[in-house]
Length: 553
Image (cartoon, rainbow, N blue to C red; front, side, top):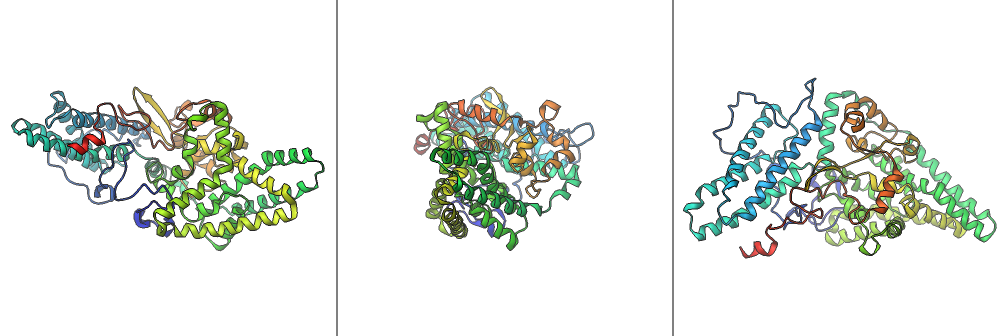
């Protein structure tokens, strides 16, 4: 499903990129992750156009001299040290953000006396970073760094000239500062603070450069459609077998146990294998088996995965245009205030587990109202999925009675985390944000998590818990994800083993923590990552200009 007002060609992808999201996100205006008012459209530099050139600075080193890199930290073998480089990006982001906010909400058209010195020093750092970007072809320096540098130069010029300005000119200057630096704040949050998608893009490029043999893993897995057929046979056989159980409570117990111990895994498998099939080269055979498998659960996974929704998630994960959070994952980020307790959390997880089909339909319907042209393709897939779903459920109910129907519905719910079933772990874990707290802000962002516990449990989840590996290489099938860790151990080594990756060692422990955590339970793909002075909910720091203040300037 596509956001309202957003064309499918945005991403330079195929027509399969038509995906759904909240209609509030558009390409004409973009809402900052910090809760500030909407900012103007992204600068051309962010869309691949040539970066704007800033004026030469006196402290800029000559082009022929190679300076010591600031971002591109290297290890003893000369390879880029990924973790140190990312922390350097974070550190500079925090510093720029702090200075820019001082400029915005402490100025009356001039700057505070201590700010210009910081700004002058910061401009020197920016100049060196731009030089490093050209000398080292450093992928860790976003192209929009040039725009932030230009913002700093603009502030410095205002500082130099403000003493001679009249009150009217100062008022106009202040208005320009608000207008100009809103864009800078947007750049800081979206560009200098890498999104989940850019985080994985940088990892992928580095892995392929240092371990080119990993490219051999990126091919279709013929076992996937076979496994889909096997699960369909098992699920149908068990649904039909339940009608032969005599007694009332015995049959009810058998339905619940069958759904929790077998059916939930089958229902989860239909989702996981539809997901795998959508990443394979599309053929009539894979599409048909995906459609049939999608008919065994009331969540229209075939519609979501095959219409391009998931493909778009990979391209824009962790940005305001990421549709997964709007469609589903907001439900696991926090519970309603009335249910903000352990028992209420279990109840909320059960409501979401059973009501996930409703969330999907509401999300699709909302986006159709906002922009039906961009979502018409997914509506067609949803119609096909609905027909498949009706045929499968009606057929099994006809031959297996109401017990078969209850088994199918309960299996779907358990597969989505009903009653905090362990399969709920996948929905919480996949883009659970890990970061290191440092005062009032966070550094060391990791927007995707993988599981490091039982290989058997991961296999029962069709290796869907190896989610970092999946987003690093979406074309690597579920049967080969473990080989990525073997072939590129330096990129997947845990912190405990001297690496930089964080893992979830226990699914049950993670669910337990989710149940007993009040307020914000998770931060999907670090989309609400805090910068200095910002509250966890993304609201502006104390003293920052409100929307009403800006309108009066």
